[in-house]
Image (cartoon, rainbow, N blue to C red; front, top):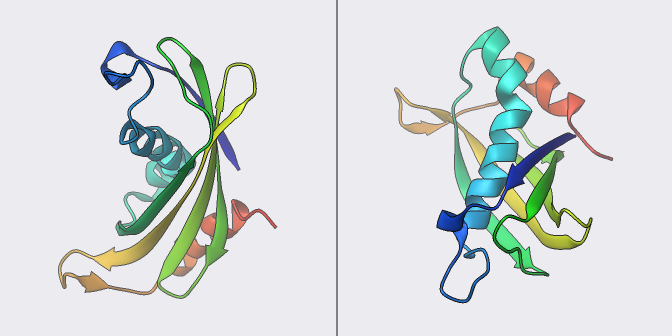
Length: 129
């Protein structure tokens, strides 16, 4: 499991004065990148594409709110894996739940591929049961 912190910036706010729904995708992306940071530094890039993203918005975030995003691997298949996320404000209020499905990708063949064993071990280390 990974925990990462952000601060809501002015650019994140919509005309209603709260964080725009699309910005949550950037917040969870930040946590996802943080999750794989150690792997990338040690082994280089493992290519995957986002096949699905879903977000349940529970409570608004506002300008200068502190944000904590918690991310973990929910499930692992042969060619894909699912990451779960929770987004909290600085008061610890759950503001959103999200999930993304990633598919291992071969950029040369432009097709999905199996998850290699080293990356599979890394995913299992972040699996929340």
